[in-house]
Length: 94
Image (cartoon, rainbow, N blue to C red):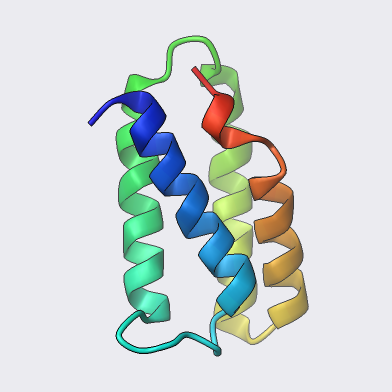
């Protein structure tokens, strides 16, 4: 899969985190599945980035913060963090 495709899929998974926010998933999608997909796409994308590698630690931290918020029941913080991540325009990274 190309970097652009991987980042597009990653961006979609981030959007799902914001829309369904841990406790409002529609079946058959689940929070665990969304989380696994998001982490897989980000792992693949990190290995392909060339220009924007300096952003990796900040994005890793946002992902960790987002899932920590959701896992602790802080829905608002999780959504806010997902939106901040999505607003990075991650589909345009190279």
